[in-house]
Every structure is written in structure tokens, then in C-alpha cells.
Image (cartoon, rainbow, N blue to C red; front, side, top):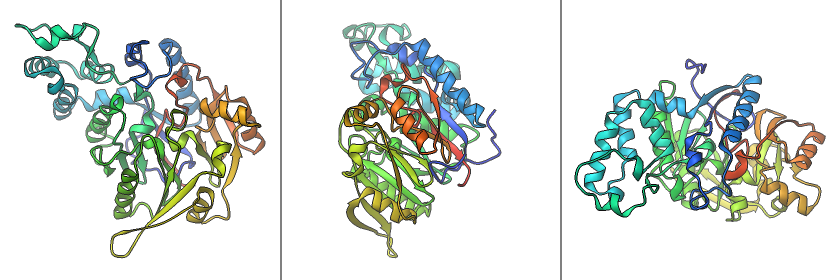
Length: 403
């Protein structure tokens, strides 16, 4: 049971993790087919029952280390119990431009009368034209769409809760998601953070209608120091907008904008590196010397000073106030490193300084971490990884202790 008396706060990547938001795979994954999986950003069709088993085991590893787990579906159902949230959820589900006015009105009327649990399921798993409520009269939109086409798109990427929101200090940044398949996730997180009892009074660090930014690109290197990846999913405008916001709120003093290669394998900064201790990262070797950073700091007149680019590791250590940032490479050779990077070897979730969760299949990376004194809690991810995401991608820390 989540401790609702302690307010959310996250100041680092490695402070002892106390509460986290996860999403257990659900019926939205059963919507994936060979016809739509690319569009919905999955590389293969996951075996859903096995993905659920793997996710349950992941959650149990966290609970076994004293972490409270809040499941997104539970949080959404609770939030939708508020009549205002229910009305907002209906609005988020129905796209009149897509359905036309008559069909949209019919669907709104139907969803307005359903329970919070049913509405939550529609918001997450979507709805096909065949599943739409029966309506009098003809609808060109209904007639010209295949019964199995989506009237409300599913959200299979809800599994990756890190991307759709991120806590910075005592404020939450709700992401402005780039890919069409993920845009509506923002509405789901907005409902949770606005109407769930634990978050009702949480202040926002960023809004979903701002320039594109995704939580997988946001890394809290140390209290007051953020690194933001700029690449496939987060734009330079998004990084600058978030920097201005956290400066204005006084929750950060330095933000590093880190250009990353715009490919599927390196879609977010946390696919390239993650923190495993207060002064250490696990990093894809090819990025070690090539990764750079632009340093942003606030000025007395309220503007932002930008310096760089400089080598990322140098800029990060300087901003963090340490001599150097230790690097643990993934893989012992270029081929192994590339394979393990693709399999999310760099995407670890820190439960405390020197204790991380990683996929068991990344044998070489996990061995390198162990050699460096990092405890690795290995989990199975053969089905969970089909959407290209590791333990960090699948978790949104809500509360961490100070280092």
C-alpha cells in the first residue's frame, strides 16, 4: 500500500528508491499485430502472459528491496472515480475529427455512463469500431472502416512509465511525447497527477503541451543538475524549455543538453547511459568519447546562459562538483557492446547507490558492473524488451531518499 502521507520527491538517479510508478502489461499489448506493431513502436509481438509474469517478477524484486509500487492502472481507476476526471477521460478518449460528430456524440454518451474501471480500460487498451456501441442511423466513418480498425487507439507503450512523466525535486514534468502512437499517454498521466489523492497537490515542472520532451531523456545527475538528451524524441526547444522551467522553479541550477544519435537503438539518453552510483555511469562504449554537452545555467536577469559543447563526461563532472564521473563500459568488444546496447544493457534502474536492476540477458554488462562493485539484481525481459526498453524505461520513480 502506497504511503500517501509522504509527498513525492526525487533529487537524483541513485538515492534509495522508496516509491515507483509501474504499468503492468495489459490488454493494450493484445492489440499488437504484425500489421500495426511498427506503427505502435514495437519490434515484435510480445507473448502477453509471459510479459505479465516478467513484469510481476520485476515488481516483486522492487518490493523485496522496500520499494512501494503504484500500478498505473490502479492509479488511473482511482483518479477516474472523481466526476471531473471521468469527464476529462471521456474527452481524452473521443477524437471527433477522427470519428465525425455523430459517432463521436454516440461514443461520448456511452463512455459517460460507464464505470471508472471500464473507462480506464478504454483509455489504455483502446476500442475498435466493432466494439463501439450500437447507434441508430448510418455513419460513413463506421461503414468505411474495418471492424478491427481502432476508433480509440491502444497505448501499448504505457509500459514505459519513465517516458510519459518524470519527477524533478518535488515537481512532476508531464512529457510532451513526440511519436503519434504515444501522444494520448499524456492525457492519462495528466488525469492521474491531477486527481489521484497522492498527487492532487503536486506542482508541475513541465506541461504536456510544451515543446517535445520525453522522460527517458531526463537524467538527474545530482541534486540540482539535469542532463537532457536531444535526439529522436526530445527537441532542443524542449530541452531549453524544461531548463527555463526548472530554473524558474529553483529546482535545478545546471542543465546539460546532450545531443544523441537519432536512431531506434539510441532513442533516449537512458539507452546510452544510466547512473549506477553517485559518481558512476554504465555507458555504451562508442558514446564515451563522442558524447558532448551544452551547459545551460540561469543568469541574474532571468535569461539562460549557454556554453559548449564540451565532452559530456567533463561537463557532467564539473556540474556535479566531482573530479570525474566513473564509466563502466558495456561489453568487452565492439560487437558485444553493440548487441548489449540494443538489448538495453545501459538501461539499468538504481535502487540505491551501487545497487541496480538489469536484464539477465546482458551477461557481459552485468559482469562488468559486478567487477566494479555494483550489485546487479537480474530480471528476465525476453518479452518486456520487445518494445525496446529496460528497467529504467519501465519505472517512474516517485520518491527517493537523499544520497
